[in-house]
Length: 242
Image 1 (tube, one colour):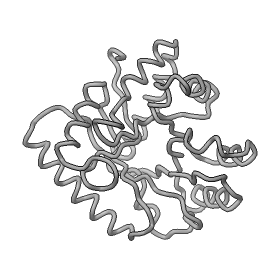
Image 2 (tube, helix red, strand yellow):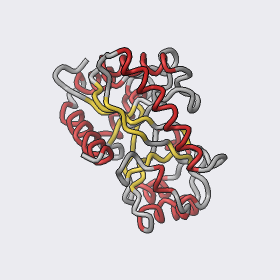
Image 3 (cartoon, one colour):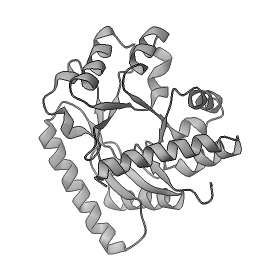
């Protein structure tokens, strides 16, 4: 692990019963404890939002899940990261025109974690992202860019990245032998500015922020670790209203 360093996890599915992430409050507590042990001091809870339900219904479910988790955390009295609520918002045609889209931003900020299509991005996708930025004043954070980047043409990808957006990569991408080199290149070239674990549980998709940061340190990318940390913590402070 990286010593004397505290991190912010931009992407997690730790809220119990919200999606395909943690299934119980106890599992959520274990995820939080593991994250804390790896140096994570702030974490965004970003359950999946799909337009099969209204935004208000989603927010009510999210609040209930957070209340259940908070109650349990008060009982166990163990150190855990500070939690800020958000969502991983699935792209859909016309999303940039949705009236209540701002409610899905990270906390009180204008940042929103956006899950882009896994298929090739069309001109409509580019327009929707542009509209979110210019009309809504929302700053999209493209979630786990490594999932969708291989399917995009360089032209369309650059048209998205030229917008007022940030890009998040999953920490696990840096831990797999087959992808870690490309992950470092994306960071060095400035394509990616943020890391998140996208953790779902304590078995197949565990918290791994500390491991990824330690890997970057080992590869001499201490400055990158500091830049990622500074930006993510700045976003967290804004989202938390500090």
